[in-house]
Length: 350
Ligand SMILES: Nc1ncnc2c1ncn2[C@@H]1O[C@H](COP(=O)(O)OP(=O)(O)OP(=O)(O)O)[C@@H](O)[C@H]1O
Ligand SMILES: [Mg+2]
Image (cartoon, rainbow, N blue to C red):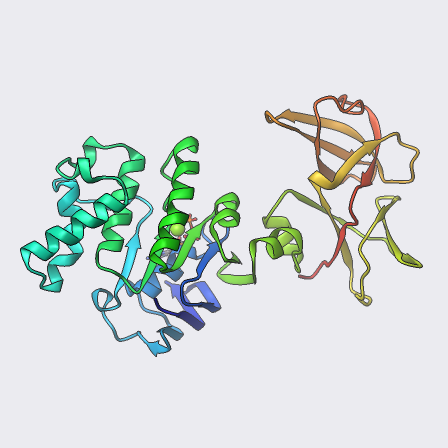
């Protein structure tokens, strides 16, 4: 088990900055996820740690030791690539044994180690197959087994589940968590899938534009974002400008889009504020309850729930999760918003 750290790392390609002031620490045995939109620099961070590319500045360390001059194969990291990068002309067994070739194990030791890992990931009966002759979920397990076979100091997983269809992905997510915990490997995972990040991570680092915006537990990130950027990227939130804040005894209210909504107590000063409206905390009511008024402009059937868009008189579109039997959910219906839990007040500049 190892501790991984990035300190003030910078990287640009052809003059374009891709990572800036990138600082992150992954503790021993911890699973930390880099979560962010496509192109924000997630894979670049992983590739820097793996040693495939070099930083322009800053420090990258494993267990506190700067690894910038250590070649990739000496960093002892188990890597799973998004497309798995299996050798198509080698068997499952040979793919998993690949990383062991450089380790001068005897034939017997290699066989024993590979067989044990294949059994651990449930692939022992497929050892002689080629990657083309197994399923996507099985290929994912081969890639994971290959990464684990070298008994790495840490695992680096780049979108390991994105090539799988939804049903297999859910099963593999649980399996990945179980493997990571039972092997106790420090893991840096990259994904743009927030459910994956929320369900697998000890901590999540939310990134955008080459920078980490916030680091926190899944609950911190989802329920208590500290920045408007994270509230926009994670969850299903609408941020609406606050016109005024009133505090009455223990209660706090924000005036938004001409109506009043419950807000959490804030110590924020004069900065311009946004009220974060969580789609699953909003209710629709008759347009005379004091909340901001708008009209239902869309509703989408999503199986267990409906997602409606309410266009407020101010022009803001707010997303609301509703039950199918919600009496107000008719297109064109005039409604007012109500919050079941106080909304978060966030500094617009964050
Ligand atoms: N070798 C390279 N040369 C030039 N530009 C690159 C190179 N590698 C990455 N980039 C650019 O750096 C940016 C970040 O790329 P990166 O692969 O880290 O993104 P990402 O967050 O992993 O995105 P995705 O979720 O789509 O995989 C992108 O704009 C990409 O085009
Ligand atoms: Mg990527």
